[in-house]
Length: 423
Image 1 (cartoon, rainbow, N blue to C red):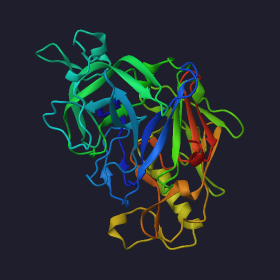
Image 2 (image 1 turned 45 degrees about the horizontal axis):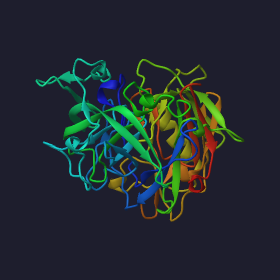
Image 3 (image 1 turned 120 degrees about the vertical axis):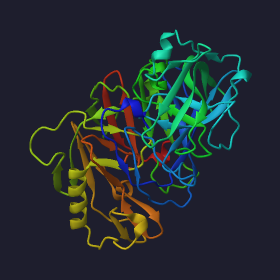
């Protein structure tokens, strides 16, 4: 759900939305120098469906109908203000701004929980347009009251407008312990689009790499500038939780770990890596169809986009090879599924296994990670295509991997993990 103005490349046709909704509840362990963990708790699993939608320049935002807008997202619980006020926002590694809907909200989407009222917080402080903090976002503008106003738009047409402010952000453990971070820059949204968000979402938590993100503002407060996540697979029982961790304690290590370099680009928000190719079974498909070296940083990892988005030329070859290796006829008579590759079967497909070949890291993907069920007795390949040469590594295929983002060593690490037992 990265911001519209941060992207310098064409965006993606997102064809898949599946119901994978989690709430993040803090579970701090050890001291803050070692970091802390947050449980990802599955909240609900309504019947899912597929629909096509065009995305502009954003990394994770999507156009969604009210019934489906929350599908495929992960909701992170934290508190802002003094006294602490709980908010639930989309955990988004593809954008920077953390924001929540605030009173008064002139034009906002409906949310189930009360809105944050800055007047009731003793630690709330508007940012002056003369402050350097106002320039953390390119869209910070001065209001007649000399406050720093912002507009943050996403490629699906959704947006938030409001005031940039500073607040105390508090992570709360299940045992009652708390870790406050003072002076965190966030957006107090007073005019938020009704498209793209649903009533469970109170805003968005920006976990990208840009200067305004929560990760960047945390810095090394918890021992190191790193974090990790472990997402349970789709259709896991709603009572099972997984984990997101921050700081030194989030380091991914041990047997089975593979790592790939993070690639630095002008756009600091996305976590770019280099995908060399994809194997379908034993058939290797080069990223650009040739044996030449690929462009560095041709894909980024996105916790807010459910499907994996591939350049059309690679997507077409992957689909053709999957068809070649699956001994069933694809669904061709269901208009709800569009052009997606789908099969009618009561259980997920037995194969083939796909392998994502990153620079220095081969990540094997079982069919429960690559095929998802939008309706009863139908399983579809959880990939979509894009005219862009830069792809997205979506959250479906991130499941059952402990994925660590080490922003100091500039690597992303993958460790096969049963995330249903990583709570």
